[in-house]
Image (cartoon, rainbow, N blue to C red; front, top):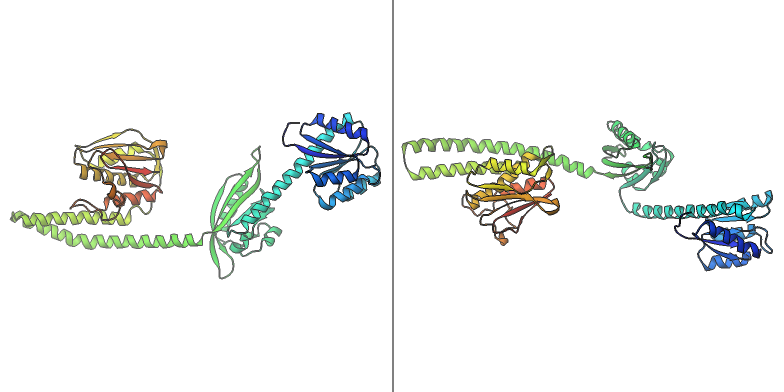
Length: 467
Protein backbone atom coordinates (compact mmCIF):
# COMPACT_ATOMS: atom_id res chain seq x y z
CA UNK A 1 0.00 0.00 0.00
CA UNK A 2 1.18 3.53 -0.77
CA UNK A 3 2.23 5.71 2.11
CA UNK A 4 -0.31 8.44 2.81
CA UNK A 5 -1.89 9.88 5.95
CA UNK A 6 -1.22 7.60 8.95
CA UNK A 7 -3.98 5.44 10.41
CA UNK A 8 -4.07 5.11 14.20
CA UNK A 9 -5.32 1.62 15.11
CA UNK A 10 -6.28 0.32 18.56
CA UNK A 11 -5.93 -3.48 18.83
CA UNK A 12 -7.65 -5.06 21.86
CA UNK A 13 -6.92 -8.68 22.84
CA UNK A 14 -6.21 -10.38 26.14
CA UNK A 15 -3.82 -12.86 24.45
CA UNK A 16 -0.25 -11.59 24.91
CA UNK A 17 1.15 -13.50 21.92
CA UNK A 18 -1.52 -12.30 19.50
CA UNK A 19 -1.20 -8.78 20.86
CA UNK A 20 2.42 -8.87 19.63
CA UNK A 21 2.01 -10.96 16.47
CA UNK A 22 -1.01 -9.28 14.85
CA UNK A 23 0.40 -5.70 14.94
CA UNK A 24 3.70 -6.98 13.54
CA UNK A 25 2.02 -8.62 10.57
CA UNK A 26 -0.23 -5.59 9.93
CA UNK A 27 2.73 -3.18 9.97
CA UNK A 28 4.45 -5.39 7.39
CA UNK A 29 1.47 -4.90 5.11
CA UNK A 30 1.08 -1.14 5.53
CA UNK A 31 3.50 1.48 6.77
CA UNK A 32 0.53 3.76 7.31
CA UNK A 33 -0.65 1.81 10.37
CA UNK A 34 0.34 3.16 13.79
CA UNK A 35 -0.84 0.56 16.28
CA UNK A 36 -1.41 0.72 20.02
CA UNK A 37 -2.57 -2.33 21.97
CA UNK A 38 -4.74 -3.02 25.00
CA UNK A 39 -5.13 -6.25 27.02
CA UNK A 40 -8.73 -5.59 28.03
CA UNK A 41 -11.82 -3.60 27.15
CA UNK A 42 -11.24 -1.34 30.14
CA UNK A 43 -7.74 -0.49 28.96
CA UNK A 44 -9.10 0.02 25.44
CA UNK A 45 -11.66 2.53 26.75
CA UNK A 46 -8.90 4.40 28.55
CA UNK A 47 -6.79 4.63 25.39
CA UNK A 48 -9.78 5.79 23.35
CA UNK A 49 -10.27 8.65 25.78
CA UNK A 50 -6.57 9.53 25.91
CA UNK A 51 -5.57 9.70 22.26
CA UNK A 52 -7.04 9.98 18.76
CA UNK A 53 -7.97 6.61 17.31
CA UNK A 54 -9.08 6.02 13.73
CA UNK A 55 -10.13 2.37 14.02
CA UNK A 56 -10.60 -0.42 16.59
CA UNK A 57 -9.67 -4.05 15.97
CA UNK A 58 -10.94 -6.24 18.81
CA UNK A 59 -11.16 -9.88 19.84
CA UNK A 60 -14.54 -11.11 21.08
CA UNK A 61 -13.68 -13.73 23.71
CA UNK A 62 -12.13 -11.71 26.57
CA UNK A 63 -12.65 -12.01 30.30
CA UNK A 64 -14.90 -9.53 32.10
CA UNK A 65 -16.01 -7.70 28.98
CA UNK A 66 -16.54 -9.32 25.56
CA UNK A 67 -15.80 -7.66 22.25
CA UNK A 68 -19.51 -7.08 21.56
CA UNK A 69 -20.02 -5.46 24.96
CA UNK A 70 -16.99 -3.24 24.31
CA UNK A 71 -18.48 -2.37 20.89
CA UNK A 72 -21.74 -1.24 22.52
CA UNK A 73 -19.83 1.06 24.88
CA UNK A 74 -17.83 2.55 22.01
CA UNK A 75 -20.96 3.16 19.96
CA UNK A 76 -22.46 5.31 22.74
CA UNK A 77 -19.94 8.08 22.04
CA UNK A 78 -18.47 7.12 18.67
CA UNK A 79 -21.23 5.86 16.38
CA UNK A 80 -19.15 6.29 13.20
CA UNK A 81 -15.77 4.96 14.40
CA UNK A 82 -14.71 1.90 12.32
CA UNK A 83 -14.83 -1.15 14.63
CA UNK A 84 -13.77 -4.63 13.44
CA UNK A 85 -14.29 -7.81 15.44
CA UNK A 86 -11.42 -10.22 14.75
CA UNK A 87 -12.00 -13.43 16.66
CA UNK A 88 -10.75 -17.01 16.41
CA UNK A 89 -14.20 -18.47 17.00
CA UNK A 90 -17.61 -17.22 16.03
CA UNK A 91 -21.23 -18.18 16.10
CA UNK A 92 -24.32 -16.89 14.39
CA UNK A 93 -25.46 -15.43 17.69
CA UNK A 94 -22.24 -13.44 18.11
CA UNK A 95 -22.36 -12.27 14.52
CA UNK A 96 -25.98 -11.21 14.92
CA UNK A 97 -25.25 -9.33 18.14
CA UNK A 98 -22.30 -7.63 16.53
CA UNK A 99 -24.33 -6.42 13.57
CA UNK A 100 -27.10 -5.23 15.88
CA UNK A 101 -24.55 -3.33 17.99
CA UNK A 102 -23.19 -1.57 14.87
CA UNK A 103 -20.00 -3.49 14.03
CA UNK A 104 -18.23 -2.27 10.88
CA UNK A 105 -16.94 -5.72 9.93
CA UNK A 106 -16.77 -9.21 11.45
CA UNK A 107 -13.74 -11.37 10.57
CA UNK A 108 -13.13 -14.95 11.67
CA UNK A 109 -9.46 -15.36 12.54
CA UNK A 110 -7.50 -17.96 10.63
CA UNK A 111 -3.76 -17.94 10.02
CA UNK A 112 -2.65 -14.36 10.53
CA UNK A 113 -0.02 -14.62 7.80
CA UNK A 114 -2.79 -15.35 5.28
CA UNK A 115 -5.25 -12.77 6.60
CA UNK A 116 -2.92 -9.84 7.28
CA UNK A 117 -3.13 -8.35 3.74
CA UNK A 118 -6.93 -8.50 3.69
CA UNK A 119 -7.24 -7.20 7.25
CA UNK A 120 -4.87 -4.27 6.60
CA UNK A 121 -6.79 -3.31 3.45
CA UNK A 122 -10.11 -3.43 5.32
CA UNK A 123 -8.80 -1.21 8.12
CA UNK A 124 -7.36 1.41 5.76
CA UNK A 125 -10.43 1.35 3.50
CA UNK A 126 -12.90 1.84 6.36
CA UNK A 127 -10.83 4.69 7.81
CA UNK A 128 -10.47 6.42 4.45
CA UNK A 129 -14.20 6.08 3.88
CA UNK A 130 -14.93 7.64 7.26
CA UNK A 131 -12.48 10.48 6.64
CA UNK A 132 -14.02 11.16 3.24
CA UNK A 133 -17.49 11.19 4.77
CA UNK A 134 -16.39 13.59 7.49
CA UNK A 135 -14.85 15.88 4.87
CA UNK A 136 -18.08 15.77 2.85
CA UNK A 137 -20.03 16.60 6.00
CA UNK A 138 -17.75 19.55 6.74
CA UNK A 139 -18.05 20.76 3.15
CA UNK A 140 -21.82 20.40 3.21
CA UNK A 141 -21.92 22.21 6.51
CA UNK A 142 -19.93 25.12 5.14
CA UNK A 143 -22.07 25.10 2.01
CA UNK A 144 -25.26 25.25 4.06
CA UNK A 145 -23.84 28.10 6.14
CA UNK A 146 -22.99 30.09 3.01
CA UNK A 147 -26.22 29.18 1.25
CA UNK A 148 -28.32 30.22 4.25
CA UNK A 149 -27.18 33.85 3.99
CA UNK A 150 -27.58 34.35 0.23
CA UNK A 151 -30.68 35.20 -1.76
CA UNK A 152 -29.46 33.09 -4.67
CA UNK A 153 -30.43 29.47 -5.26
CA UNK A 154 -27.65 26.88 -5.10
CA UNK A 155 -28.54 23.45 -6.34
CA UNK A 156 -27.12 20.06 -7.31
CA UNK A 157 -29.05 17.55 -9.45
CA UNK A 158 -28.29 14.09 -10.74
CA UNK A 159 -27.27 13.91 -14.44
CA UNK A 160 -30.85 13.05 -15.44
CA UNK A 161 -32.47 15.70 -13.23
CA UNK A 162 -34.43 12.93 -11.49
CA UNK A 163 -32.68 13.35 -8.12
CA UNK A 164 -32.22 16.59 -6.21
CA UNK A 165 -29.04 16.28 -4.18
CA UNK A 166 -28.89 19.76 -2.69
CA UNK A 167 -30.86 23.01 -2.71
CA UNK A 168 -30.85 25.94 -0.31
CA UNK A 169 -33.77 27.95 1.02
CA UNK A 170 -33.30 30.61 -1.66
CA UNK A 171 -35.35 28.38 -3.97
CA UNK A 172 -38.59 29.44 -2.32
CA UNK A 173 -37.77 33.15 -2.65
CA UNK A 174 -37.51 32.86 -6.44
CA UNK A 175 -39.90 30.04 -7.34
CA UNK A 176 -42.44 30.40 -4.52
CA UNK A 177 -42.03 26.68 -3.85
CA UNK A 178 -40.74 25.07 -0.62
CA UNK A 179 -37.49 23.12 -1.12
CA UNK A 180 -39.21 20.04 0.33
CA UNK A 181 -41.66 20.03 -2.60
CA UNK A 182 -38.76 20.10 -5.03
CA UNK A 183 -37.11 17.17 -3.28
CA UNK A 184 -40.30 15.12 -3.62
CA UNK A 185 -40.51 15.84 -7.36
CA UNK A 186 -37.28 17.45 -8.64
CA UNK A 187 -38.63 18.86 -11.92
CA UNK A 188 -41.70 20.62 -10.52
CA UNK A 189 -39.84 23.94 -10.73
CA UNK A 190 -40.71 23.79 -14.45
CA UNK A 191 -44.34 24.33 -13.47
CA UNK A 192 -43.40 27.81 -12.22
CA UNK A 193 -41.71 28.87 -15.47
CA UNK A 194 -43.63 30.91 -18.06
CA UNK A 195 -45.09 28.61 -20.69
CA UNK A 196 -43.28 30.41 -23.51
CA UNK A 197 -39.91 29.76 -21.82
CA UNK A 198 -40.32 26.13 -20.71
CA UNK A 199 -39.08 24.55 -23.94
CA UNK A 200 -35.95 26.71 -23.90
CA UNK A 201 -35.23 25.72 -20.30
CA UNK A 202 -35.77 22.03 -21.09
CA UNK A 203 -33.36 22.30 -24.01
CA UNK A 204 -30.74 23.85 -21.71
CA UNK A 205 -31.28 21.00 -19.22
CA UNK A 206 -30.74 18.39 -21.95
CA UNK A 207 -27.56 20.13 -23.09
CA UNK A 208 -26.26 20.25 -19.52
CA UNK A 209 -26.96 16.54 -19.10
CA UNK A 210 -24.91 15.96 -22.25
CA UNK A 211 -21.96 17.77 -20.67
CA UNK A 212 -22.24 21.35 -21.99
CA UNK A 213 -22.29 24.26 -19.48
CA UNK A 214 -25.43 26.37 -19.79
CA UNK A 215 -26.68 29.90 -19.06
CA UNK A 216 -30.40 30.46 -19.57
CA UNK A 217 -32.75 33.33 -18.72
CA UNK A 218 -36.49 32.87 -18.28
CA UNK A 219 -39.59 34.23 -16.62
CA UNK A 220 -40.92 32.77 -13.38
CA UNK A 221 -44.56 33.06 -12.31
CA UNK A 222 -44.50 32.78 -8.51
CA UNK A 223 -48.21 33.51 -8.32
CA UNK A 224 -50.98 35.02 -10.39
CA UNK A 225 -49.78 38.50 -9.44
CA UNK A 226 -46.00 38.06 -9.22
CA UNK A 227 -43.70 37.49 -12.18
CA UNK A 228 -39.94 37.86 -12.24
CA UNK A 229 -36.94 37.13 -14.43
CA UNK A 230 -34.39 34.51 -13.38
CA UNK A 231 -31.03 33.40 -14.70
CA UNK A 232 -29.68 29.88 -14.15
CA UNK A 233 -26.08 28.82 -14.70
CA UNK A 234 -25.31 25.11 -14.79
CA UNK A 235 -21.94 23.33 -14.86
CA UNK A 236 -21.80 19.57 -15.47
CA UNK A 237 -19.36 17.72 -13.18
CA UNK A 238 -17.63 14.79 -14.87
CA UNK A 239 -15.51 11.87 -13.73
CA UNK A 240 -12.16 10.69 -15.08
CA UNK A 241 -13.91 9.03 -18.03
CA UNK A 242 -15.77 12.21 -18.97
CA UNK A 243 -19.14 10.91 -17.78
CA UNK A 244 -21.43 13.48 -16.15
CA UNK A 245 -21.87 12.63 -12.46
CA UNK A 246 -23.83 15.66 -11.26
CA UNK A 247 -25.18 19.03 -12.36
CA UNK A 248 -24.23 21.99 -10.19
CA UNK A 249 -25.87 25.34 -10.63
CA UNK A 250 -26.83 28.78 -9.40
CA UNK A 251 -30.10 30.62 -10.01
CA UNK A 252 -30.60 34.31 -9.29
CA UNK A 253 -33.26 36.97 -9.67
CA UNK A 254 -32.35 39.32 -12.57
CA UNK A 255 -35.61 41.26 -12.71
CA UNK A 256 -33.94 44.58 -11.85
CA UNK A 257 -31.36 44.06 -14.59
CA UNK A 258 -34.06 43.25 -17.14
CA UNK A 259 -36.01 46.37 -16.17
CA UNK A 260 -32.85 48.44 -16.50
CA UNK A 261 -32.13 46.98 -19.94
CA UNK A 262 -35.67 47.80 -21.06
CA UNK A 263 -35.40 51.34 -19.71
CA UNK A 264 -32.01 51.72 -21.39
CA UNK A 265 -33.41 50.55 -24.71
CA UNK A 266 -36.28 53.02 -24.41
CA UNK A 267 -33.81 55.78 -23.54
CA UNK A 268 -31.62 54.96 -26.53
CA UNK A 269 -34.66 54.98 -28.82
CA UNK A 270 -35.71 58.37 -27.43
CA UNK A 271 -32.16 59.65 -27.80
CA UNK A 272 -31.96 58.57 -31.41
CA UNK A 273 -35.29 60.24 -32.12
CA UNK A 274 -34.11 63.39 -30.34
CA UNK A 275 -30.78 63.54 -32.16
CA UNK A 276 -32.48 63.03 -35.51
CA UNK A 277 -34.83 65.92 -34.74
CA UNK A 278 -32.01 68.14 -33.50
CA UNK A 279 -29.92 67.35 -36.56
CA UNK A 280 -32.78 68.26 -38.89
CA UNK A 281 -33.90 71.39 -37.02
CA UNK A 282 -30.37 72.74 -36.65
CA UNK A 283 -28.96 71.87 -40.03
CA UNK A 284 -31.78 73.37 -42.06
CA UNK A 285 -31.34 76.98 -40.80
CA UNK A 286 -27.58 76.44 -40.72
CA UNK A 287 -27.59 75.44 -44.40
CA UNK A 288 -29.72 78.48 -45.21
CA UNK A 289 -27.26 80.72 -43.40
CA UNK A 290 -24.26 79.08 -45.09
CA UNK A 291 -25.86 79.39 -48.53
CA UNK A 292 -26.72 83.03 -48.13
CA UNK A 293 -23.30 83.85 -46.72
CA UNK A 294 -21.68 82.13 -49.69
CA UNK A 295 -23.78 84.21 -52.08
CA UNK A 296 -22.91 87.36 -50.19
CA UNK A 297 -19.22 86.42 -50.24
CA UNK A 298 -19.30 86.16 -54.04
CA UNK A 299 -20.54 89.75 -54.26
CA UNK A 300 -18.35 91.19 -51.52
CA UNK A 301 -14.88 90.84 -50.12
CA UNK A 302 -15.92 91.84 -46.61
CA UNK A 303 -13.81 89.90 -44.08
CA UNK A 304 -16.78 89.74 -41.73
CA UNK A 305 -18.58 87.48 -44.18
CA UNK A 306 -15.58 85.12 -44.20
CA UNK A 307 -15.57 85.15 -40.40
CA UNK A 308 -19.29 84.30 -40.38
CA UNK A 309 -18.70 81.45 -42.85
CA UNK A 310 -15.96 80.06 -40.59
CA UNK A 311 -18.36 80.24 -37.65
CA UNK A 312 -21.05 78.40 -39.62
CA UNK A 313 -18.56 75.68 -40.59
CA UNK A 314 -17.52 75.39 -36.97
CA UNK A 315 -21.16 75.04 -35.89
CA UNK A 316 -21.59 72.26 -38.44
CA UNK A 317 -18.59 70.44 -36.96
CA UNK A 318 -19.95 70.92 -33.44
CA UNK A 319 -23.29 69.41 -34.45
CA UNK A 320 -21.50 66.38 -35.90
CA UNK A 321 -19.47 65.85 -32.74
CA UNK A 322 -22.42 66.42 -30.42
CA UNK A 323 -24.48 63.85 -32.28
CA UNK A 324 -21.56 61.43 -32.21
CA UNK A 325 -21.13 61.95 -28.47
CA UNK A 326 -24.83 61.39 -27.91
CA UNK A 327 -25.10 58.20 -29.95
CA UNK A 328 -21.71 56.54 -29.97
CA UNK A 329 -19.93 54.58 -27.27
CA UNK A 330 -22.97 53.42 -25.37
CA UNK A 331 -23.38 50.09 -27.14
CA UNK A 332 -21.24 48.05 -29.50
CA UNK A 333 -21.85 46.09 -32.65
CA UNK A 334 -20.54 42.57 -33.11
CA UNK A 335 -17.04 42.03 -31.79
CA UNK A 336 -14.41 40.21 -33.80
CA UNK A 337 -10.72 39.41 -33.47
CA UNK A 338 -8.70 42.16 -35.20
CA UNK A 339 -4.95 42.93 -35.08
CA UNK A 340 -4.19 46.22 -33.37
CA UNK A 341 -1.79 47.10 -36.20
CA UNK A 342 -4.64 46.89 -38.72
CA UNK A 343 -6.91 49.16 -36.67
CA UNK A 344 -4.34 51.83 -35.85
CA UNK A 345 -3.03 51.99 -39.44
CA UNK A 346 -6.59 52.35 -40.80
CA UNK A 347 -7.29 55.10 -38.26
CA UNK A 348 -4.13 56.93 -39.31
CA UNK A 349 -5.07 56.72 -43.01
CA UNK A 350 -8.56 58.09 -42.27
CA UNK A 351 -7.18 61.20 -40.57
CA UNK A 352 -5.19 62.16 -43.71
CA UNK A 353 -2.21 64.03 -42.29
CA UNK A 354 0.42 63.34 -44.98
CA UNK A 355 3.22 65.31 -43.32
CA UNK A 356 2.99 63.17 -40.16
CA UNK A 357 4.30 59.64 -39.63
CA UNK A 358 3.21 56.46 -37.85
CA UNK A 359 5.41 53.64 -36.57
CA UNK A 360 3.83 50.45 -35.15
CA UNK A 361 6.35 48.64 -32.95
CA UNK A 362 4.23 45.63 -32.08
CA UNK A 363 0.73 44.26 -32.44
CA UNK A 364 -1.75 42.08 -30.58
CA UNK A 365 -5.17 40.70 -31.46
CA UNK A 366 -8.08 42.62 -29.91
CA UNK A 367 -11.67 41.44 -29.51
CA UNK A 368 -13.51 44.61 -30.46
CA UNK A 369 -16.03 46.47 -32.59
CA UNK A 370 -13.45 47.41 -35.20
CA UNK A 371 -15.39 50.34 -36.67
CA UNK A 372 -15.98 51.91 -33.26
CA UNK A 373 -12.41 51.41 -32.07
CA UNK A 374 -11.11 52.86 -35.35
CA UNK A 375 -13.20 55.96 -34.68
CA UNK A 376 -11.71 56.29 -31.19
CA UNK A 377 -8.14 56.05 -32.47
CA UNK A 378 -8.92 58.55 -35.22
CA UNK A 379 -9.81 61.05 -32.52
CA UNK A 380 -6.56 60.34 -30.65
CA UNK A 381 -4.51 60.78 -33.84
CA UNK A 382 -6.44 63.91 -34.83
CA UNK A 383 -5.79 65.31 -31.36
CA UNK A 384 -2.04 64.68 -31.84
CA UNK A 385 -2.03 66.41 -35.25
CA UNK A 386 -4.00 69.41 -33.95
CA UNK A 387 -1.68 69.93 -30.99
CA UNK A 388 1.64 68.66 -32.36
CA UNK A 389 1.46 70.05 -35.86
CA UNK A 390 1.11 68.39 -39.25
CA UNK A 391 4.59 66.85 -39.00
CA UNK A 392 3.95 65.05 -35.72
CA UNK A 393 5.46 61.54 -35.34
CA UNK A 394 3.22 58.85 -33.86
CA UNK A 395 4.23 55.53 -32.32
CA UNK A 396 1.84 52.66 -31.50
CA UNK A 397 2.50 49.37 -29.78
CA UNK A 398 1.62 46.85 -27.08
CA UNK A 399 1.94 47.33 -23.32
CA UNK A 400 4.09 44.90 -21.26
CA UNK A 401 2.46 41.50 -20.62
CA UNK A 402 -0.03 42.35 -23.41
CA UNK A 403 -2.28 44.05 -20.86
CA UNK A 404 -3.24 46.66 -23.43
CA UNK A 405 -2.03 48.89 -26.26
CA UNK A 406 -0.78 52.46 -26.59
CA UNK A 407 -0.36 55.29 -29.06
CA UNK A 408 1.88 58.28 -28.41
CA UNK A 409 3.24 61.33 -30.22
CA UNK A 410 6.27 63.60 -30.04
CA UNK A 411 4.23 66.78 -29.69
CA UNK A 412 4.09 69.21 -26.75
CA UNK A 413 2.42 66.66 -24.49
CA UNK A 414 -0.20 67.12 -21.78
CA UNK A 415 0.79 68.77 -18.48
CA UNK A 416 0.35 66.41 -15.48
CA UNK A 417 -2.26 68.68 -13.91
CA UNK A 418 -4.40 68.49 -17.07
CA UNK A 419 -4.33 64.72 -17.58
CA UNK A 420 -7.30 64.01 -15.34
CA UNK A 421 -9.47 66.44 -17.29
CA UNK A 422 -8.69 65.61 -20.92
CA UNK A 423 -11.68 63.24 -21.22
CA UNK A 424 -14.21 65.72 -19.83
CA UNK A 425 -16.80 66.97 -22.31
CA UNK A 426 -15.98 70.45 -23.53
CA UNK A 427 -12.42 70.45 -22.21
CA UNK A 428 -10.10 71.93 -24.84
CA UNK A 429 -7.00 74.13 -25.04
CA UNK A 430 -7.72 75.35 -28.59
CA UNK A 431 -10.00 78.28 -29.37
CA UNK A 432 -11.58 76.39 -32.26
CA UNK A 433 -11.71 73.05 -30.40
CA UNK A 434 -14.98 71.40 -29.36
CA UNK A 435 -13.59 69.42 -26.43
CA UNK A 436 -15.63 66.36 -27.47
CA UNK A 437 -13.03 64.29 -29.33
CA UNK A 438 -11.39 62.64 -26.33
CA UNK A 439 -14.74 62.36 -24.51
CA UNK A 440 -15.89 60.20 -27.43
CA UNK A 441 -12.71 58.11 -27.07
CA UNK A 442 -13.47 57.42 -23.41
CA UNK A 443 -17.06 56.38 -24.12
CA UNK A 444 -16.05 53.97 -26.86
CA UNK A 445 -13.33 52.44 -24.68
CA UNK A 446 -15.77 52.16 -21.75
CA UNK A 447 -18.28 50.38 -23.98
CA UNK A 448 -15.62 47.73 -24.66
CA UNK A 449 -15.17 47.24 -20.92
CA UNK A 450 -11.65 48.69 -21.08
CA UNK A 451 -9.92 51.67 -19.47
CA UNK A 452 -8.10 54.55 -21.13
CA UNK A 453 -5.55 56.81 -19.46
CA UNK A 454 -3.00 59.48 -20.24
CA UNK A 455 0.39 58.13 -19.19
CA UNK A 456 3.92 59.45 -18.78
CA UNK A 457 5.89 59.75 -22.01
CA UNK A 458 9.08 61.32 -23.36
CA UNK A 459 7.71 64.77 -24.00
CA UNK A 460 4.60 64.02 -26.08
CA UNK A 461 1.14 62.71 -25.21
CA UNK A 462 0.70 58.98 -24.61
CA UNK A 463 -2.69 57.24 -24.46
CA UNK A 464 -2.91 53.72 -23.08
CA UNK A 465 -5.90 51.42 -23.61
CA UNK A 466 -5.97 48.82 -20.85
CA UNK A 467 -7.80 45.83 -22.23
